[in-house]
Length: 69
Image (cartoon, rainbow, N blue to C red; front, side, top):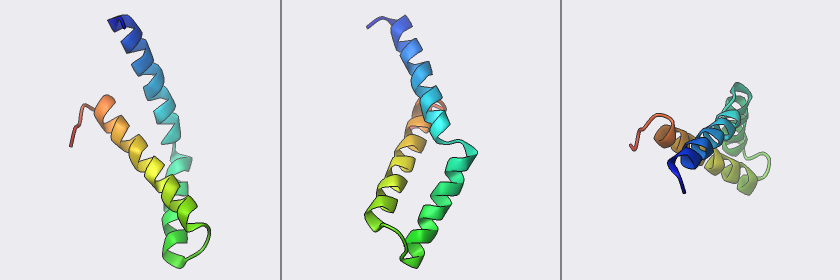
């Protein structure tokens, strides 16, 4: 893989991840937590979506912000 290809791939990946974390998605994350706390909805579905949200945040922190912690 060439550096140019890596940079293009990285940029496209960051754009896709950033779309996942648009303001509407924050509202959905809060709603999932609320549903888990009140025992409503699908527990496994809410947990799976929260897991995905956390993974997206971690990838953005590392690849966009350079934050490994």
